Length: 96
Image (cartoon, rainbow, N blue to C red; front, side):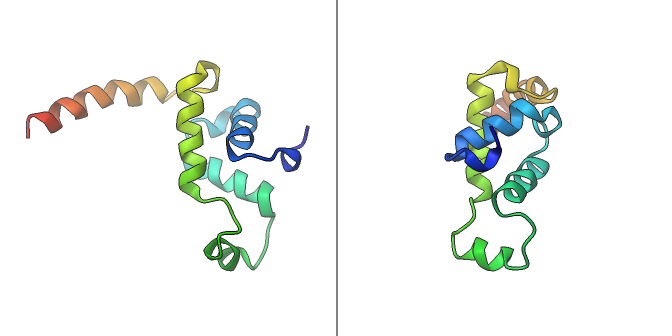
């Protein structure tokens, strides 16, 4: 199945994470690949983005976070490192 035939943001992100492991730890590459598959190379990208015709980057990264939370096989190498740091950050915030 091609990415162009997949309708929802969550399903598209899952397809990309499942098929391209190098995108699991890099939101910039994930978003760029998502957008390239959504609109290709177009000179009107910014106009279309501003008009809401292109999926927002935060929607794509939110979908990645949720999918990696629910499906361990979609996690990148940095997933566990980030979550170990989360505990330290939360503790330091509480102590402020």
